[in-house]
Amino acid sequence: MKILVVDDEALLVKGIRFNLQNEGYDVITGSDGLEAVRLVQEQSPDLVVLDVMMPNMDGLSACTKIREFSDIPIILLTAKADDMDKLIGFDHGADDYLTKPFNILELKARIRALLRRSGGGEKKAPGNILSIGSITLDLDARNAYRSGTLADLTAKEFDVIEFLMRNPNRVYSREALLDTIWAYEYRSDIRTVDVHIRRLREKLEENPAEPKYIMTKWGVGYYFRK
Image 1 (cartoon, rainbow, N blue to C red):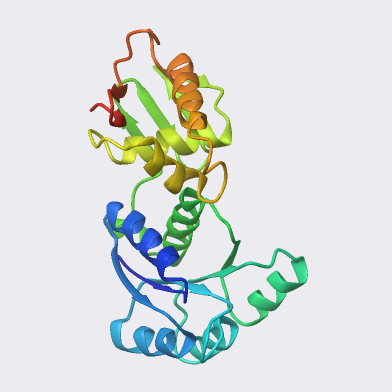
Image 2: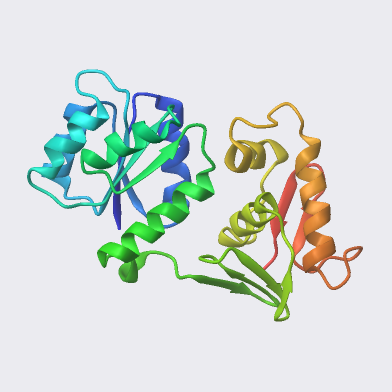
């Protein structure tokens, strides 16, 4: 599946592109509304992630223009959380709306949902169930199971285990996990990663003291062993 990401914040675009490419998506990018309209016409992406506040042409105007020739799913990104702003976005043809700062895993879940709804998700998008060994995730219900038994995970714990399971055997530093899962939150408190890993082991490993899946690479970071 091809996804177009358009935002004038270069670092944000880079982070979204990195995470979506890790999911197997083909990602193209732009930096303003005019470019968004042109890329939809030229590249025929399967979905657009579009910032509202951009130079040259804002995201709402770009959304309106795109709707003149395409029914492609569009997710708007905005720094405004007001319900009226969301309604304005929907009136301009958006399918979904995400407020900054956002969790990258929530964005990926919104993308999967829209692709399934549009009929494109069955092609290449990840399935609704992610299972490795005795650990299974229901991605739609956001439930985790250990050997078929429901594990009571918090939202952030689910985010962490989903990310690690989607990238098995790949080691991530604490800083990388903070940037990916927490985004702008807790960036100065690296210990929050250790706490969540410990709790995940307690809830998902048969023997938390000798984990089988949620592993530490000493001096580097954490990974999910497949």
